[in-house]
Length: 334
Image 1 (tube, rainbow, N blue to C red):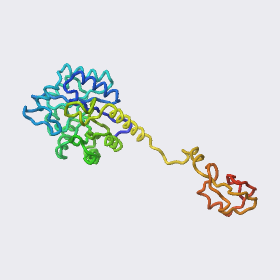
Image 2 (tube, rainbow, N blue to C red):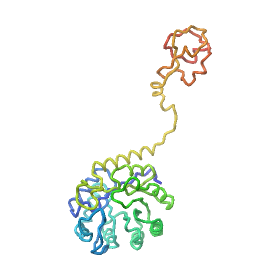
Image 3 (tube, one colour):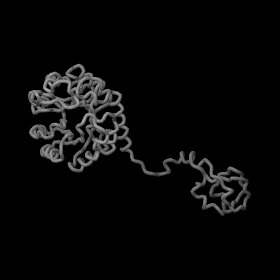
Image 4 (tube, one colour):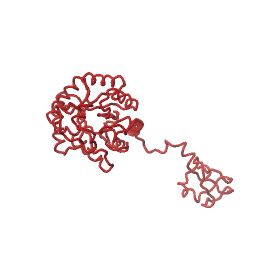
């Protein structure tokens, strides 16, 4: 589970939301950084290395053929280098998911500090081994994998002692609350002895915040300027105000979890005096009277004898005359 001395790592997944615009890609970095995220993640597609020209598009995006889409929205090596530099300048970690071994080589040239393995590459064991041999931290998304497939992927990565975090992910766009699967995230923590997190495809922040309370060390959410933008990911992404709210929520939860309290009433002494009640005289009571319940009222403030002790004082003898509203104390009785 999460080490509470270490901040949850929040990734804004830009993917291909930039739609091939280098200027938009840079502006998305700036917008995400302004939200307070830790990292901005892209996707590095080299069409000829990863897909056949007639490969189908996903069901949630039919805008154009996949091969052509990747060609149109791709960047050159120099542009990737510039995007990493732009991330550095704005205080966020540059990440990009590779979808081929050639993409891994490109990202090594760029200087990516860690690798995020997308759900569709979990069974691409040759690429996983290539990445694991580099010794850099690996974030493994589990979206469409069976346990057996995920076990194999984890084994390959851990064989080379690459630091590993496994993310629960449901590869549906968008995901309903019933399909988030935070129980799987918790099971992965025990199964692999590794940090875990959530790559969240719901349309709100609730699942991500719940994941943090259950030990997520990484949260990934898709990010866009507007859900009205063209492309495969924009419709199920967070807009800047929503991403800012997510970051604030995660940081608030971290603070809450890092400061456990002991249940001690002494901590609220002043509040108890103001809000709780005391035993007080209901009427004029002369000295020598044996106290009965009809002579006692229970009223604020809580500076005297607690009403919880009422039975202790029934039948005790009053040592002095008291007026209505007198707050009883121990020294009033014989």
